Length: 227
Ligand code: CDP
Image (cartoon, rainbow, N blue to C red; front, side):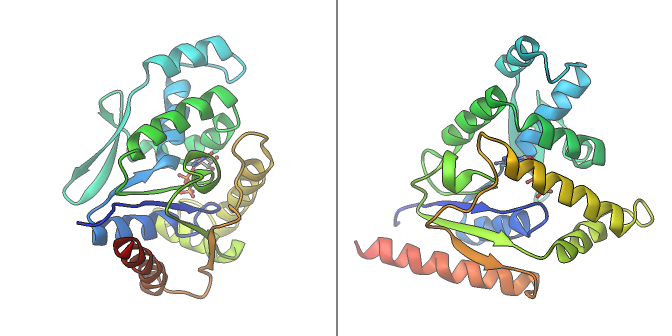
């Protein structure tokens, strides 16, 4: 068997990262690591413990004891925070906003990046996030940066939500706020790595997007096998 790669997929909210990353991981028999779910879990842990994001000592203590892991159950990936399934709760709007806020705190990023590096150090991973190709795995074997227009992203996310839960305008407003917050932080901002392949998914179907990325990954794997 050839080398098992580290594949980095970054991009703004709802740009199609997780759908793509999940499928590519399945096709290759790799592990999918959803780093957004890790920031979401950290936000949920702090929220539940009523820790103010200004209280660095309490955050530090929380991070020392936190356990975040992934498990496959009935073909779905579930996220465990301190052993409990939080997969649904971490997608709620309040935790989504808090995840972007907690992700600006350097000690939080430091801890998450360290965990992510440990999870991927043997290769055979598809990792998606904001800073995978720039900070977590600057030497990843192949990097993608996915984008799509704000409207397309808002519509995609809105369709995943229960009917009538929120308007598409509200979803768009939240996405714009989060992108701005994620791009403007000083540590690990949302940024395209110089050597990342840019894919604009606005006009692509899910299948087209997966095919396009998978074929580039296969080319990379074949070229690695020849060396
Ligand atoms: O799925 P979606 O694109 O909406 O978000 P996500 O990937 O689950 O990420 C949730 C939040 O976590 C983002 O808004 C970022 O603030 C943060 N995040 C980060 O800072 N760094 C990462 N590598 C991944 C996520």
